Image: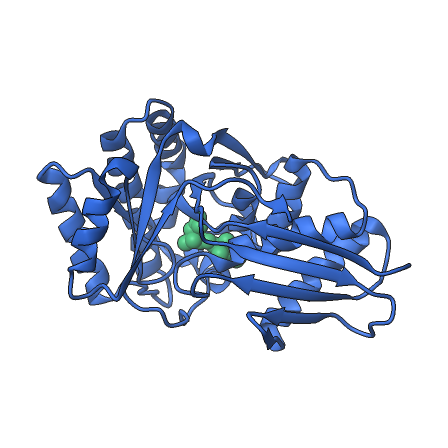
Length: 324
Ligand code: DP6
């Protein structure tokens, strides 16, 4: 086989209804469905080159040669895609993130979305969007939601074939922004993959999962009707429910810093005072403050003035994973 190259770019996404815990950890069949929006402006760009002269896979992230767990995860995703194509050819993967890795901005989502599209394309596989989301899901669950455009739902399903993601609204359907308040840019201690395996140890997880269809309906309706108040209340409830599960797992996972809680409280008080903003947190201390883009300047300015906030990154609703 000759040299086969392809480059893809993907956005991370912020979950509005969270994925936490799997019914199958290996296939990444989630315990519940989830909804997210892609984050425009933040990107992972990945170039892959399959080369028959390579004796092993090579993975460079932000200019640094990777080994250990990071490399293993990429190799195992490449093995999945090589298996579909029926080849053993090795690859050189070059990835660049333009945002901090591992701080609650889901870098694994954009990483595995970009890798999936780049690798399948380079190997000449014709894969439709639904199947791309199923392959990306195997690399990182949330990655399946970075493949389609705009606002995306991941239907949990019960098996590999029916657990996939699809767009429920395009980026221009509702002009929302995410003001990401960076409390702590350091790499998180317990990664999501390990966290998912602990979810079932919390006595609250079953209640969270049982109530998920109701929250998914509320979130979908809020998006469809562009009702910010309705979106804010379900998004904040869902995020706090996930963190309640995390904090009551064995061992417990505390992703919040004191600054995280301060921001959650102040955002709620802003909303009471008429500034439409809503806070949500993934597996890290940073707070994603959602608002309508018409109020983004005011929200970002207020956030920047808080003592716990080191930096604010602003992102609108992003498009799909695409070839470059
Ligand atoms: C808290 O998709 O990062 O961000 O499948 O193990 O890669 P893996 O986990 P990942 O989990 C994301 C968890 C979350 C919530 C969410 O994005 O839905």
